[in-house]
Image 1 (cartoon, rainbow, N blue to C red):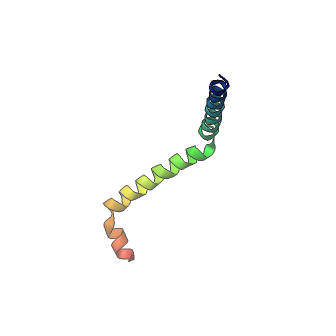
Image 2: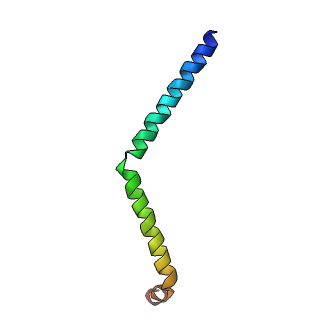
Image 3: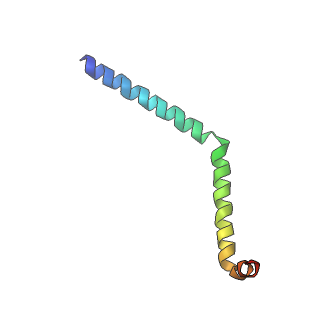
Length: 59
Protein backbone atom coordinates (compact mmCIF):
# COMPACT_ATOMS: atom_id res chain seq x y z
CA UNK A 1 0.00 0.00 0.00
CA UNK A 2 2.81 2.39 0.93
CA UNK A 3 4.54 1.70 -2.40
CA UNK A 4 1.47 2.76 -4.36
CA UNK A 5 1.16 6.00 -2.41
CA UNK A 6 4.86 6.71 -2.92
CA UNK A 7 4.54 6.09 -6.67
CA UNK A 8 1.51 8.38 -6.93
CA UNK A 9 3.28 11.15 -5.01
CA UNK A 10 6.39 10.71 -7.16
CA UNK A 11 4.34 10.84 -10.36
CA UNK A 12 2.46 13.96 -9.26
CA UNK A 13 5.66 15.73 -8.25
CA UNK A 14 7.21 14.85 -11.61
CA UNK A 15 4.13 16.19 -13.38
CA UNK A 16 4.26 19.46 -11.43
CA UNK A 17 7.97 19.80 -12.16
CA UNK A 18 7.36 19.29 -15.89
CA UNK A 19 4.57 21.87 -15.89
CA UNK A 20 6.79 24.43 -14.15
CA UNK A 21 9.57 23.92 -16.69
CA UNK A 22 7.10 24.09 -19.60
CA UNK A 23 5.62 27.35 -18.28
CA UNK A 24 9.09 28.87 -17.85
CA UNK A 25 10.11 27.97 -21.39
CA UNK A 26 6.86 29.22 -22.90
CA UNK A 27 7.07 32.49 -20.97
CA UNK A 28 10.65 33.12 -21.94
CA UNK A 29 11.52 35.80 -24.47
CA UNK A 30 14.36 33.64 -25.73
CA UNK A 31 11.93 31.38 -27.58
CA UNK A 32 10.46 34.38 -29.40
CA UNK A 33 13.92 35.57 -30.36
CA UNK A 34 14.84 32.08 -31.53
CA UNK A 35 11.74 31.98 -33.74
CA UNK A 36 12.73 35.33 -35.28
CA UNK A 37 16.27 34.09 -35.86
CA UNK A 38 15.04 30.91 -37.55
CA UNK A 39 12.78 32.95 -39.83
CA UNK A 40 15.67 35.26 -40.73
CA UNK A 41 17.90 32.28 -41.55
CA UNK A 42 15.21 30.86 -43.81
CA UNK A 43 14.92 34.17 -45.66
CA UNK A 44 18.69 34.38 -46.07
CA UNK A 45 18.89 30.85 -47.43
CA UNK A 46 16.14 31.63 -49.92
CA UNK A 47 17.91 34.82 -51.00
CA UNK A 48 21.22 32.97 -51.41
CA UNK A 49 19.57 30.31 -53.57
CA UNK A 50 18.01 32.99 -55.77
CA UNK A 51 21.20 35.08 -56.10
CA UNK A 52 24.03 32.62 -56.49
CA UNK A 53 25.92 35.01 -58.75
CA UNK A 54 26.51 37.36 -55.80
CA UNK A 55 28.40 34.62 -53.96
CA UNK A 56 30.43 33.72 -57.06
CA UNK A 57 31.57 37.35 -57.52
CA UNK A 58 32.76 37.67 -53.94
CA UNK A 59 34.72 34.43 -54.01
